[in-house]
Image (cartoon, rainbow, N blue to C red; front, side):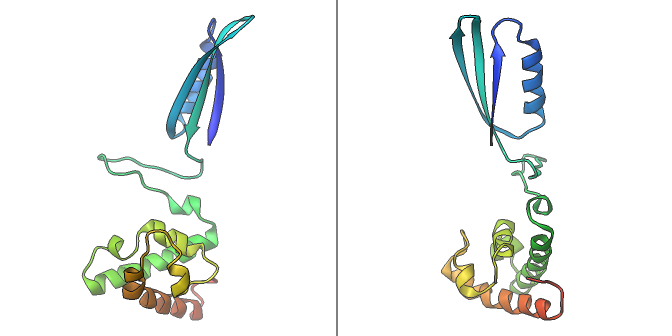
Length: 155
């Protein structure tokens, strides 16, 4: 997302305050600035690129920012995402692996947005290769299918 601010070179206080409030309340990616000349005087134009609202980010102990998938996904997609996380946890426990090596949260989020979950659709998800589909795909699909039959998900 992009927001543009125009700040007069003379008497910029109110405009600078507005821009600073915006910057402090958004996750800013980049700020580009340019000075422009006009008959009434000069002004600065600031182009602020920021991350989409609705996505919550945290930064604790220099760890990478995390996405709040409950804020990003629809209610139904988040139910599917949560069920997929449970299945991933069980697979990881059986394989004695960290859960993220089975499928990442981003990959599960992408899977939760599919119209149906099958092996060919899993292969379309960025980051999921043939080997992980062969190793974990069938188990994920079977367990997800069981949860659908038990009424745990409408997907």
